[in-house]
Image (cartoon, rainbow over all chains, first blue to last red; front, side):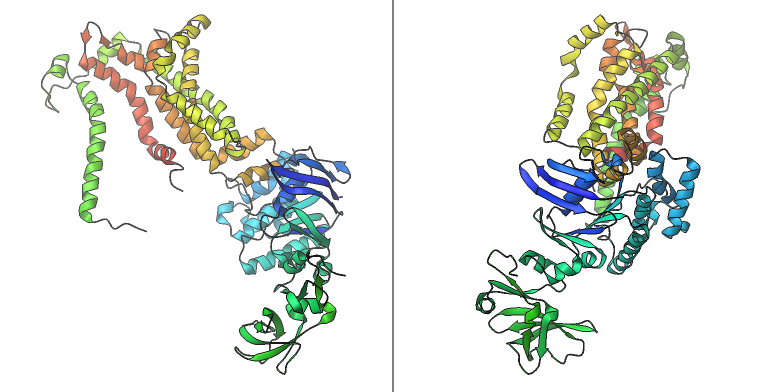
Length: 333
Length: 275
């Protein structure tokens, strides 16, 4: 079991309120991702759940039990840190065994569990090495191993992949998702990378200045962003935002059109523009188009789309998938 | 950017360094040399090696004073005060390094400021307290005084070391179920061991060489080697050769310790100066 309930959780550092009163329910077994720009309070929120920071007001419940006043060790949670936070003076074996030793487990049982974890995480041949002798990916696996052996009620990940290179990040993303499928344990994952959020989460919590902007499944957030902030944050490349008379024509203060929801044509369209930089990815091409009377828009085209720098093309938005926002930035349903 | 240093400049600075080094070493060298001279030769015009070498001074010093007892006192006082200081300083430095408050910096500066006070300023109250509590001329008393005298430096050094340890590692230990004792014992201390070792070494040397408190608060029982040296500077006149022999015997252990641990000491004293 590993449901987490936050009730009116507030965090203040001196006079600065970084997390205004916030309510959130994380169901048992869910993979929840906190996402948002730097300084939005996502790591602070995770640390509050972990018990590494004290809440200023409100309460945190784990499986219905109030743990607000409990120290981190007694919450039954495991955390994987951005910097791995391995013990540099201990071997991989001792690193993974440390939480079990702290729990007072028998040495024979510790050995067995460490061997199991090392096997699952492919760390067998590195087990007697120290963290300094491992690569970034291996270190992250040790950190995960240290978390797994505790059999926690929930895992907390604080931007665990941000120190890895792009290729390794992709592999580790899959490994963590696979781990979630195998263990079926609640995972709370903090990232500023919306690709990680979209690909891993069952539920995404978008945070902005300590407030929850929206909670939903990745596709819900993609399809129905409730605010300009969420619309701009979810989706890659980011949504094109258009204001002024163009938006007014659609009865909105601002309209949002995703790059993949613009139909392109060499023979004209609703809007017309001149092609600037083209990013060829093979399967797709992202065109940065200077649209007359609107400004720069990004459009996703087929990899074979024949436009070149300086060509004039037509762009027609898919109105059914267009997002409309009022003056306050809230979506118009 | 690397600075271009010409061979001439390098030679000049090497010469400067050697000159300073020799100037610092010379009194020790001269003391050792004098300890092998007769009293008559010791006061005569300086002769470097051209004199009659003798071990007579060492024999006399051994006969006249209980060297072993002074040596043991020095060992007990320097090691005892170092261990006691560490016992207090490790948790103090831990708290200041990992849970700093707005007043931490001020507190550290205040601690350091006590080192700027001339010791004689607190001599009378300490002497009276020691007299009334029966701590005069006891090893326990000197261990306490040496601990108090060196505590600011020990806390400062450990604080500097601890700050180099990423806080996330200690948080990871907390998440892994470590209580405060386990966190300090299994994670912080092993990681800061080189720093703790340098701090211990420096503190042992400082306590070993301390002369003000050891001379004023001891008589016969707890007198360490500093008092042993001072006993050869008497109102009846100076006996340079014997004084030198006593000094050599007093500083030899700490010189040897310093020689073998110089790498640790240099690292300890310059730690945190460059990242």
